[in-house]
Length: 281
Image (tube, rainbow, N blue to C red; front, side, top):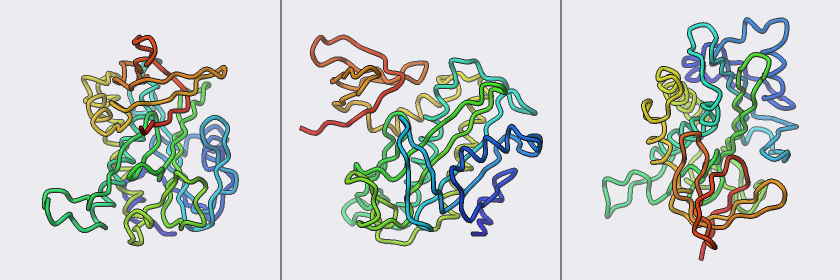
């Protein structure tokens, strides 16, 4: 896969015909003998990932050629990249999720005819939303998941994304998954979507670091909240230790945590990690 549009927006992009885990391979590259050659914004991509990992230790498998596994290397504090305070790192997966939400939205708008009764709606009735903290949903079905990993020795971060391009009904890993092809009926331009994601991610992350990791001053908090379909929804959060929280997702706090108002006692609780389910009544 040549990916000329994507190569034009990344300082280094390597496409692998097959890979175990792009996150694992990028971590090895970014900490190995050639680490200096893997600068901030470098990207590793494959359409055949055999040992992909999701959140909470889940495995992630897909047929060859029907998905993209994308890993991006961020080096805060590296050459030309401002240092981030520790409490700002929680926003990185949200920034990646917002970037992918925007890229998928534009891919959908390019593929789906506008609703005839609303010419200003370019989505054709297909809704693309960010699910906190880092899933992208198309009409409520997952089209992309994101996994961020810190390299503690250097403070670098690897952001991995798995985007479903052309999976059909028989390929879907879960009943709540979809692909761009299933959502639109049109073969997606993988290079265009990837280039859009990388460019948008870079723009949002640059704004974030330019403002010292301040989510409000950088506009990141506003941008993420506007895209996040979790806010205002009734949710169930599976917390560490087999605990469960059911309530209304109120907002995202200054550290990127989801603030949920408990349905039973009305108290707010900030959630930093957990499996979130949007409830439908």
